[in-house]
Length: 290
Image (cartoon, rainbow, N blue to C red):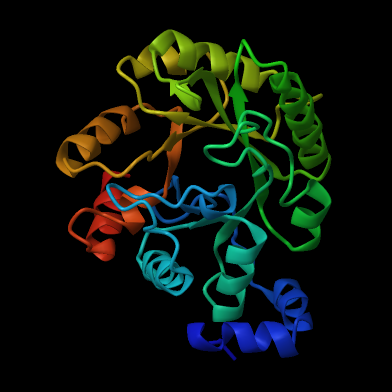
């Protein structure tokens, strides 16, 4: 029986074993792409890194019930293939009965908390490959921020390489989201120049003992042809921040989606918290571009 959002806390307290039981019986998807022939995922792993902002609202993602309602709306729309999240989000959706036939990607390293002195040190604090396999998920996602001036980057590189290999051993997708990053005014900022995105993609593609199951999650920048020419791996587009001018944002995505190397999109706040508040319309617009 599907659990209403208002009853999640009670079920978690009284029947924690129900989560593992539901994971064992969840209907898995037939593959990594759905009706569009490409992969459309809703991203919801931001809160675990303390990143709750969407647009001008610094605490937009802080209300968990509202976030789950928005996720359920998005996942129910035709053409949405699945979700990317941490265990708390994934397990809530599992209890709600929202994950049958969906591609589910577990977020792995959430230790680089937003706005902290150790933000670039992205420790693996969420899923590991063994848990992803045990829970019947389809893959794992990792954030790889490369700061040339911060030695902590080396630890993240090593950990991501190990995770790529462990997922490959289990024939599960390794979704790597790389950036060249710098400390600016005490905060980590990602370099979205074409050269920086190309460099980050080439480093990410070479992680681990096998790239057979590696997909790259890359931001949309000015010259995506040059970025895509830097790798032969499947690429998913990163939806990025909420934009007040969504028509321009969507147009830039649609242009890049014409390249067959782009296998889909991973969109979070732009779909879940659109400027007009209409989640269904935002989701349908993204699916329509596929």
